[in-house]
Amino acid sequence: MKQEKILIVGAGLSGAVIGRELAQEGYPVEIIDSRGHIGGNCHTERDAATGVMVHVYGPHIFHTDDAEVWDYVNGFAAFMPYKNRVKTTSGGQVYSLPVNLHTINQFFGKTFRPDEARAFLEAQADRTIADPQTFEEQALRFVGNGLYEAFFKGYTQKQWGCSPTALPASILKRLPVRFNYEDNYFFHKYQGMPENGYTDMIAGILDHPNITVKLETSFSRNEAAGFAHIFYSGPLDGYFDYELGRLGYRTLDFERFTYDGDYQGCAVMNYGDVGVPYTRITEHKHFSPWEEHQGSVCYREFSRACEPGDIPYYPIRLVEEKAQLADYVARAEGETGVTFVGRLGTYRYLDMDVTIREALDTARLYLARRTEGAAMATFLNPPL
Image 1 (cartoon, rainbow, N blue to C red):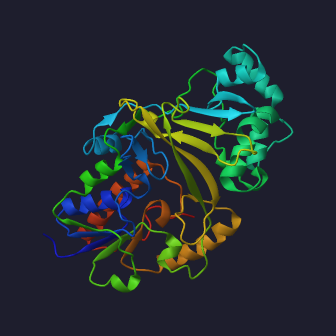
Image 2 (cartoon, rainbow, N blue to C red; image 1 turned 180 degrees about the vertical axis):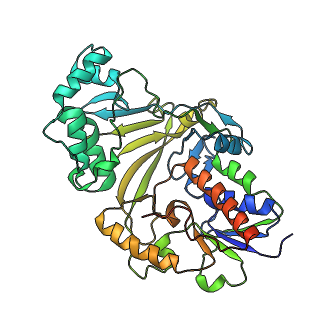
């Protein structure tokens, strides 16, 4: 065993994967987490009354085109086939998402073929918007006012807590429409769910004699002495005790309820109308379609601004946050012996597969730098 002891802050995907990679190379690894469980926001647990596997902090669906990452997670869990087919309720009707040919025909009362639907939406689009700058302009330019009002405006306003006119066009990175009847939410080659939940999978990753996990343990920079390096996956601003103020996040509140039977017939039902206070209802037994349960566990999700003590979910990254972020990044790059990783450490929204990819790359870079006798980078991918 090597002498250099590694401290990892956070027992979610980033910390678990980095810890495992370094432990396998002989490094003693200590992983701490302020919560009473491993897995971070991917944490899953069985509901005692119904037996349903519940995604405690909201649903996580694994999807990737990265074959190495897919092989990696399958080394610690049996992944079952799962396709994310989302529905939305808008104006008293239920539609499929993403907006596809069925959605278009249903919404407009048509029987368009793909080329007809494409031409029809182009006629609906606001072609006076040559260079969309906001979320609203992007939507109006590509789908027109009807689909925008029904499926994007209200949901976005509830999710982000501000008008879509204040959000950047980049949130709608591509045309959010399919001109066929494909209703699988993701395009990726590999999609699935771990048979026994994410917490069981992460427990497998952490199961190594060189790894020690301490839960309900908070991190303090004053306690970092004695470690050769720190990998920090907590909030970037929290590392500096919020000395420059708090970065903006959205958080989620969950209203949990149970139902005897099948409540909505699908895993995810969005609510596009702004008059409905929640953004969606998730029915968790449908995330494990290979299981059968009479009872059901459901969550209504409410999005709001993150306050001190809340769990941060989505970085806002508007103009004010980006300026503040630049100051925190400058502070971080002045530190030695620490690398900031993961969703919170880099203030970016990351899918699970990207989180794992970056964790693998970070661990490998650290090992290479140690071989070379060089210092480890503060960020694998600077968040600016």
